[in-house]
Image 1 (tube, one colour):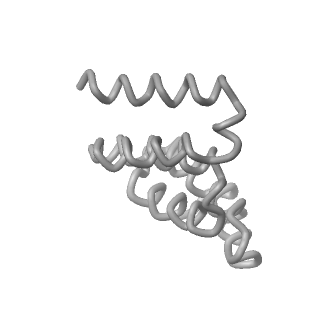
Image 2: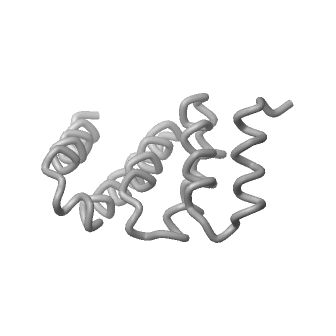
Length: 106
């Protein structure tokens, strides 16, 4: 049975299917619950709806790591670095670069 939060986010995706926010929120919830495949699906929809959504790209990479898909995560985080937000935010750039280095250590 879906939690109240999950139900709320699912309802957001039904009410606003063209908005990435509901899919991002749902994907983050699944990520927090280590429901990797469901997280990848929701976050993939979010970035498809808004390819500039850097937070969704970062979370998608995290979910891919959870599935053991390190090459996909690397490509995803590289894509996150190309978003307008990441190009301006040095802290985000640093975080993504660290994540990419950590992948290389495995």
